[in-house]
Length: 329
Image 1: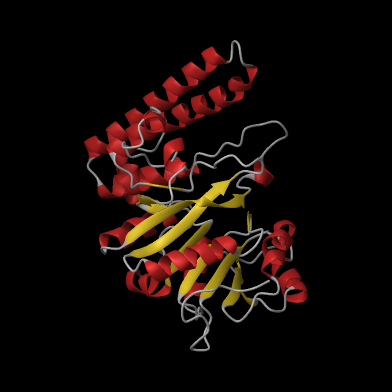
Image 2: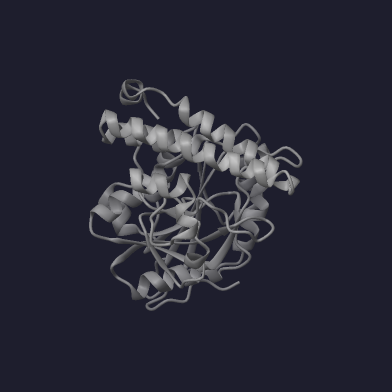
């Protein structure tokens, strides 16, 4: 397997790309994640930090993948802090953050992202389209910052019909057919950034243990005048929620909503936060009702209808503005 072919590749004796992976209870996933990276050349280095996994992940990597630069600790640092610890060890010009449940068939997406950063100096972060096992686009791989407009675009499905309307997540099919889309953030499951920009902004926010740190990073990078670009032509498999999904069930997690709402309350007014909760509850309630109607003739819509109903109920029960302002993530 070859490495990354870019201009000046390997000319200074340093790797071009540092691939960083944070693991926690990932032994059942790690072969599928690391095996495609075996045999890479000197243009790539692979670093893993294990967050004190009780399943022997670190020991397994040390035994079976001696070419990985492995660190581990006696506590779970969370996603952001653990990645920050790896950033400090990186030697590459670019840093690829890769989840242990995100799988590369080969190095083509890595090569493509590095090439894009090579030729577009205004771009600081790039990321591919994330897909499910069946090849469907995985909503949540990139999008825009949390505003009342983007929340409305997402909750009421407006973005799916009108690509010009921003949404917290990319979901419009027309955008997925483009070569690139300028966004505010890229999902941390597979994200490549300039190392110098990560140093400039201080990496991930240390006060976010997990969920929403990639949104926060992208927004801070954009505030520094850099671009964040989504490259939907290149696809990477991400099996998010696979270990939590019951047979035949639709994976459900509202942690994305908790993270968005918490950050929004910390940055916006009381009335704006109330509107955020109302928009989420009403939008997902509408989705649930529409899918329930579809479910009368198409039974496959019944499970998504229930999930949308759970989202609506969760939005209505989000903590108060005052509670959000004093709590941690």
